[in-house]
Length: 146
Ligand code: DQA
Image 1 (cartoon, rainbow, N blue to C red):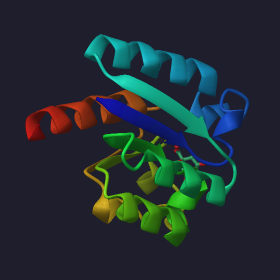
Image 2: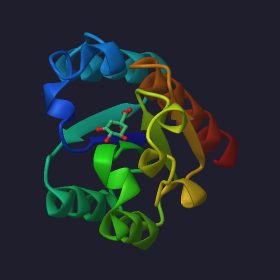
Image 3: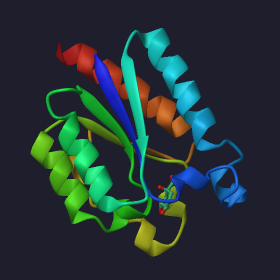
């Protein structure tokens, strides 16, 4: 099983960026923990971050035929990007939407997600653990479907 973790804009700044909201772990540490978790689950994991919508769309398109599922924190693009939604629907891979913060406890514009209604599940509010929970749920779903 091969899975992809996608991180959207500004997540390269984790650790320095609004630590009260997003915590003190940097992206390298989060990806490292996910790689360890994936190895324990016996799955291959690729991680990718970009600040650019088109680069995220390209990476989602590349996942077609090479990946079995996606864990995505599209960050601000969650609330705005028809292009990322369309790419996820085009490749038709199961995906889990994750957020470090509880977006529903924040500004109104963060309550809307353009991805959530097509996601397998949505996990938010648990800091880096949101990614781990998303990975675990995705693997369980894919194993049950196999
Ligand atoms: C975020 C929440 C988004 O609203 C925000 O734009 C981010 C991070 C999160 O992980 O909590 O950049 O996706």
